[in-house]
Length: 195
Image (cartoon, rainbow, N blue to C red; front, side, top):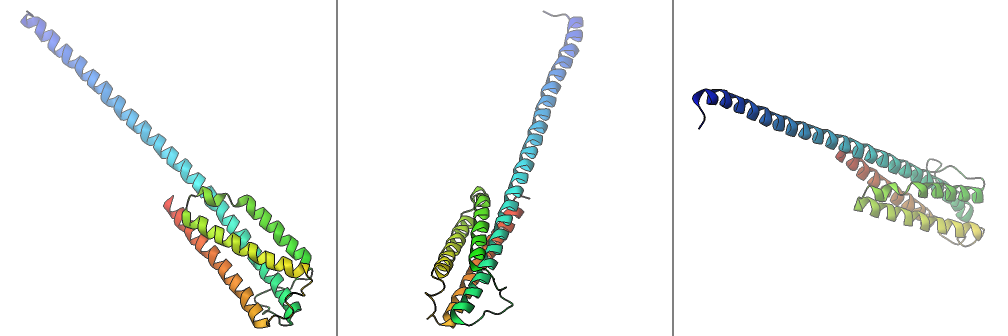
């Protein structure tokens, strides 16, 4: 069918065309793989950046709660001194001059913290959410007790034992700080996970 001379021309030509076609598809698939890897890397970096931002927001949220815990301890120390006549150690607290204003500032700080609290569920860590819920309940209960004591002009606890009052205040402080510490540890673990 084909002559020998025609085959000498067609075989190298066909081989060259086949080589170009195979080379084109190999290069194209390699380029697509590289592009896919670059896009995956960009997407990972973007997600890591977003997670870092969320972790930073969560840390700011916890710093706000640490400030709230300190303010509550200071206010309760002042209330304890008025109610029981026994003062907390000056190392543990700073006395508060205006109890109502101090209470209002705590509520303002708590409201500011609520604006940052969405950074916790967004991180999608069940233990972190549970710890946050426990901390919020603990602080809310303590603020209710303080609000009642201030509203009743400190009369409701005047017959309380100073040692039991002190124990309750210290227990609140320890539990609240433990919640924050556990949450900070979880945030550290999440930060390492996304690096």
